[in-house]
Image (cartoon, rainbow, N blue to C red; front, side):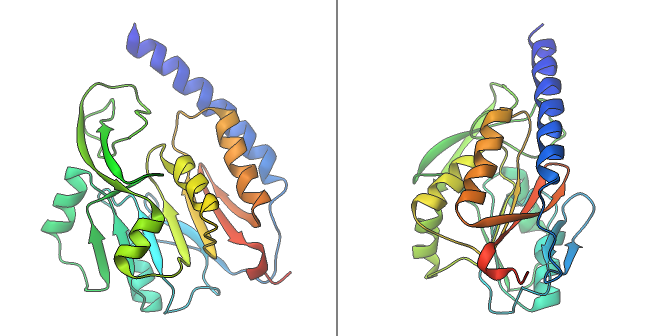
Length: 235
């Protein structure tokens, strides 16, 4: 019965959120100044404005899982350093067992709105890799790991800005984005997945918050959204 109730909840949120994004999609910025291209695999790739990205950009990619094709595409195409974050044990093993270039800087830490140890709850399907601090899938198995704010990571890595921020962090994205705005951080590009199931109202408020903060939504791929800081767009 408990799984059935979860399935009903998931299905309802999924359908409502797809409807919300279809509506929002009618207001996408159409700009000839952006060259949008998907980098990485079908599963792990993201659509970004490739003509904006430069080799000296500071890129934070949160949520590694077992697919680093987006990170490696940024490195190979633009010659930049990518800072990747994920405390999930399988993600840590994946990075340790594979050979990555020196410009792929991996830290086994989660992102949140405060610096603290948090529980990461597992998925309903044990074959899946992602875990969630907000317990998106309502399970009772978890591991504990350190989480940090964006500003704390910036101090640790000696960065004064973030140019590209990718968030695929299983429900923690809204809390991290709120903290980002509180701290007046403004990455030029934000790629965020609104992981399901999430309240349609919460998702809508998060998107509207970014738009009000000076961002323009330039691409929607299922629940993966790409935002560009308005001043960076040449209309």
